[in-house]
Length: 161
Image (cartoon, rainbow, N blue to C red; front, side):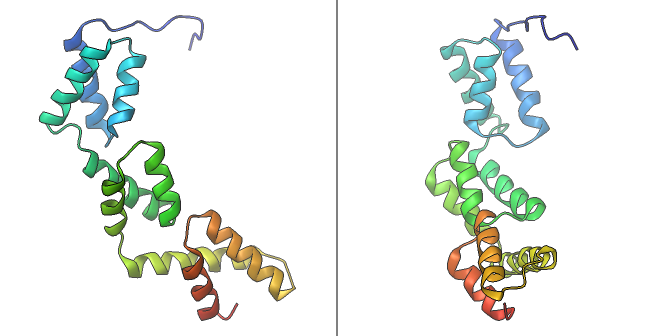
């Protein structure tokens, strides 16, 4: 692909709307993602806001639906904890009430089972013999995956680590 060729800007609002509909139909998107893409395509502020309004009205864009899909996807596919999911949603500029709603949609039992799997998988990879250092490394790893410290400690105790 030729990197030197400049991208063609979109000036027609109807073309922008059609492309935005396709962009949103492909996968769930945050409002800010779509807004950034429209600006990247070269549309002006008033046109961007009208397109966003149309996408919301036509149900192509739904922030709550996006937040829930994002949370479920990151949890199921990547095994992320609530903290990391929350951070990701904040980066996408999703509002706090919708973030809370999306995190509540994650089943508590599944969440704990995922934490156990994450810890067990890491435990099998560690070569550390000192039990204190091993426990510390497991705790730090689970924290980096976005799980809550008190839940990690409970899980490690339950696992006898």
